Length: 502
Image 1 (cartoon, one colour):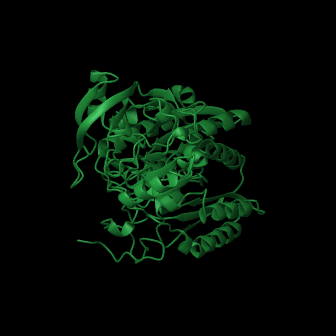
Image 2 (tube, rainbow, N blue to C red):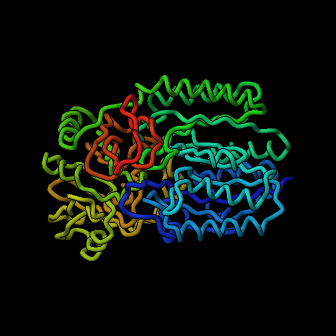
Image 3 (cartoon, rainbow, N blue to C red):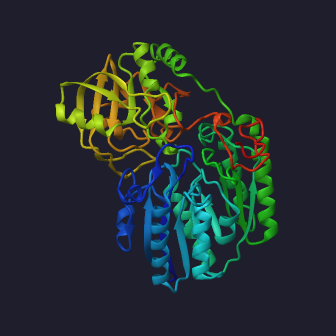
């Protein structure tokens, strides 16, 4: 029986987003548990589709002793404030120091954390941990599929294991895979690593593993992993809204020999680069998307889904722009439903008024994004909710949602689900909580890029990706990058970044 520690510090940073991640964002519960330390970690993640949960369950099945440390996450935002980063890093380091001696360490990280004072949040954290525990302790790190894998991460971790699905329905399974790999490393299995960075950024909407070319890439990855000498394969598709030098996709191969790792990494890298032309798809403007949706919904029994990708809170936005809602109202798309719009002030007004009452409010657009103002009008309060419920879809499965006061509002025949805490609209339970059965709707506008597909694709007639105003720009050519490495193509087959811009 080995003594294995588990901790986590999870954040996906959109460096172009309007709001920074403060310590309070990690301390409070939202879609995931609040910051937890010590023995309470095990119960906090139990039954949730989270890497930490999968690691705990698999490690217990292997018969090892678990040593819980600090674990926390915050919804995607802009840079993690220096105070938050240093406080949480200090907690983890103190817990690891107190837990020594250890036989192995698992860290649940994201791979795209940027702090106010650090481009590579995870790489620096791993550097500090390695300095504390020494060079020989096996450290396995779980990463998100959207990780921007860096040289420092690869150097200071013994192995990196990333999700293989987007929507991320395999988060718990990734933790279990990491546990099985750490078990082998603790037993003395050698682990050689190879990492390859690809020369172009992939838009989030086309990283989806339910569609090509990503689906074929991950099938090939699993084939390569089964070859003799291989321990683990990962392809992290990257998180483009992070303006750092090492932004972008990466192939990671780990094997019992350097030759095997290099061969597998080279083969998968070649497939990714060959697939570059296929990493593209149509993006719809709001009015044309609504017009198309109305044509399609008239002849279908299933909903047409509009993915409001540029205001996807899962990519660091504030989930409060009103562009798609306004387009639906202009088109008289009666019965259409939009969600989730995060506006705690409007949710509070609805709760003060009560169900069945009408309120005059300015809804959404409270983030201060240039040129955007709240949508002013009379809204009927159709339904109220506490914001406390358990998610049922494959992505958020088992998550005990704490979204604050919620309300279903109606304006000129278009309904909108309002929350007090932002959360990506990726689970049908978010709508059922306020009386909406998603599968019975004609048009659903969801503030999400891809994760909604896990629970909504099966009920959709068609999915249209909409580029309404928001800080998660789908076209990277519109982002004011300054720190990418020169030569990196900003879009598949697109122009290359030429260096820092004024």
